[in-house]
Amino acid sequence: MSLPTPPDLDELLAIARRLALEAGALTLDMRATARLQPDHKSSVSDLVTAADRASEAFILDHLREHRPGDGMLGEEGTDEPGTTGVRWVIDPIDGTSNYVHDLPGYSVSIAAEFQGQAVVGVVYDPKANECFSAVRGRGAELDGIALACSTTAALDEAIVGLGFSYHADRRRSQAQVLVHLAPLVGNFRRLGSAALDLAYVAAGRLDGYYEGGLAPWDTAAGTLIATEAGAIVTTLEGTRSPVPVIVAASATLHARLASELSRAIDEAIWTA
Ligand code: IPD
Image (tube, rainbow, N blue to C red; front, side):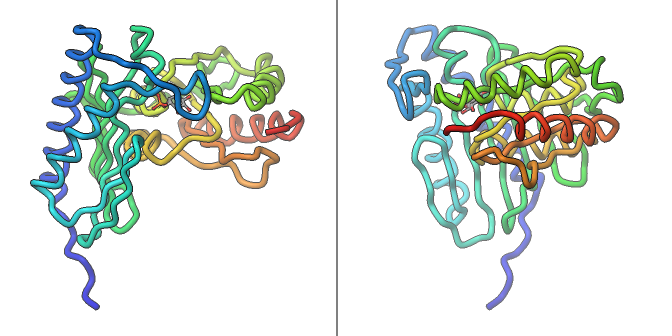
């Protein structure tokens, strides 16, 4: 069986950027005209809106027409295998709670993988009109400006982003982790979009970021953007966390943050 032909990365980037910008405009328009229809998913705080569904449908329709044969994975229920070796991983609105509450900080996240490895990533924040992107091996940028992650080495000077679960029992355990970390870390931010958290690590706005229980669509594009900006992004190994925990930070900070976080996780009580 012959191997799939490597894709043209410039073409994939152009498609991802265009779709993220157009889907972002669609979400802004739906919010402005109050077409939200919020609904619950895994818990009462895990929201989905008509705009999540419309954004995903818009992106998928375009990909089916212009990239026939590519695989697709989307947050709102899409999982289609492909034949070309390329798979698109889509979060049509990452940060739906922010979107519903009209808070800043939600994004459209689109990654293209080739043979299981992310090769292109785009994270677009429609409210701020900021488009973060990366191509594997070519660095990351924010609207044409090259990105470099922070060089902060001291944990007690670091601003670290984090996320909380939609499930109350797990949030209680995550709060215990925070109790351990609080005196060690400079300060924390809970921004509400994992894709943007990772893009902010790339931009040096956050020195580090961690979160447990994320899905591929939350992290695929942001992880490539952060690593292409020089950050290290790993999943913690061998902790007592019931779900995988992602840790992103500069090379100067990552080991310290990961080791304190692992210790904090192992001291917490996990019931869910
Ligand atoms: C969520 C956001 C949030 C994170 C959650 C994600 P969604 O994505 O990324 O910051 O804490 O774990 O599920 O549900 O808004 O697409």
